[in-house]
Image 1 (cartoon, one colour):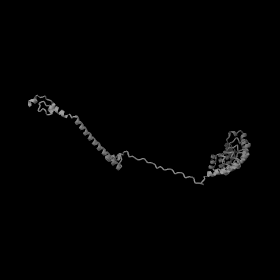
Image 2 (cartoon, helix red, strand yellow):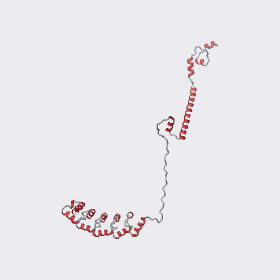
Image 3 (cartoon, one colour):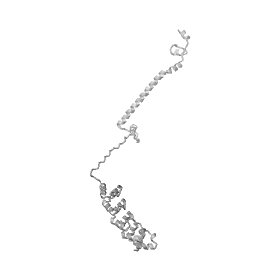
Image 4 (cartoon, rainbow, N blue to C red):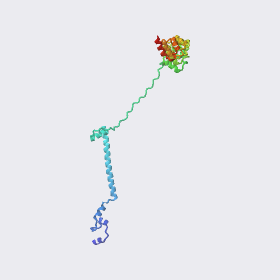
Length: 272
């Protein structure tokens, strides 16, 4: 039996498979190297084991994070509070807490109440008064509303209409004359003297409130100065007591052209 084994072909595989025993040529280093090489099936099995271990670790971490988030939510802790509680930091940290938006209350506006029957406004009564006086068509609705808003009475308009002045003045002029307290008698005096068309309604208001008489206007007109001075200058000269004779003296000496009406008033009061 031993002779047969001795003459048979030797191989390392036969040696490690125990087909040949006590071979004097057995290589121990080669045997260890052969055993250390794992087959693919063994490597795949090892990879599956490692994947399962990693999956278990990930699941454990996920369960811990969910538990920690729930714990923080129940106790209403912020990130900075948790950090300080765990690590004892005294530094102030920015809070990342979420604040829900504030939604303002929306109120539905009240529906305006319908007008009460019989509760007519003053404008309606005013327009009715113009209709009854036959004055509604003299000015447009815009003018009639402006007359009402500025307090011009229907009675004043009736008097101005009877005197024939509604055709001479616009509704804005009527408003100025009424609020300037200009009387119809003063207008009649200006009209009779021929000055009504010479002055604007603002000039008439100024002359009336300045107390300028028709007689003074006649004197200035006869001396030829009415066209040389504005209505404000005439008011000033009248209230300054300046006579037409003094103005004539200035004019004869060639001084009138270089003097304003206030200079004339000063010169007159200096001599008197």
